[in-house]
Length: 483
Image (cartoon, rainbow, N blue to C red):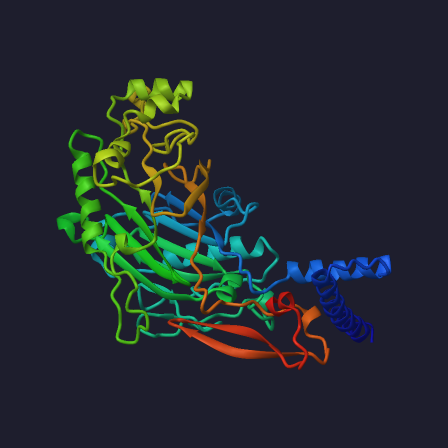
């Protein structure tokens, strides 16, 4: 009964506000000012007005926060308790709308893994761990769609809520977990949008479910480009994800480039970057409605390129260690190979935030707090000059970097790196995606009728729009028609 009474009062209050606002507009046009309105009633009406403006469903929030992270895990399986390391890396206290995670060497780069059949076991483990981290942080029950090995090499979102598919259209079996038996999984906060593995290179993209209701997310596609041995094996190369959010196209490229710190090794990395640009293609099918979806990396509006790019320093071993000891990052960056490529090389025009953290590679397997080498040879460690191998770049207008930092997990010989971005997306004015009107607008006031359930179909996405139809013969003020 209380709920009915509150709804009835809200309906009467809103109707009263409409009439009061209409009267005030008429008085304003006639040059009259009335002071006979009861102050308490007017405060209530103004409060209702503020609530109506605040909950205006026709003004979508078009800025997205995108988290991009990269981590070379050195062939180690995600066993043991990595929850704390993931929390540190994903910075879950400052939640993003989209999480884009790139991994390198999720399997050891041995011959059988490079030339053998693709095994998705490790990818499934990482997806399960990520899904648990981003969802259980908010008290949401979570069940990953990749509990069982899959017969194909990637997972893609196809638009219908609750349905998950892969390119071969094989449905992924889902096991029921004892902790969530009999419960709905729709309360999970983030949804796996795309997941692609090529030998050790792996990308996983997660999106808030709220965005799928607010925007048209479509044309989610993946592509892999092997650039390793003989330029055709997947021990090096990239995996990429392309998608449209409303009218803005995004491309995420996770890469693992050629290693080596000898003079000339940077040339091999540059060649692989050029090959990834040339060979990455997001092909369209005959069923695609949007023929203008970009086919190449550089055809997208917003591009993020990240991974173990393996660019080193034009320095010998001793001076970098000395500058690291002084935390003189600016002096050290003057010798960074990737910075040179941004000035006049393969990444010319690409942006990267200020690096205000220590080089991320290579840490000692004997003591994770120090870099490998640099000590007497009895340790038998590889002598490696520390370098910022793990990087995050972006290209395109309308991207603002909020943070750029490294985490301190000692899980591998690389430190994980992440960046948080804010970006605007373009919303078609002729066909806005409108959120459902709040309960205050669903009253039984005679002048308003709500019509719901109108479906807006997009490629790989369906959104529900709530429309407002005014049936009163007396026209309402213009402001009230913009709810």
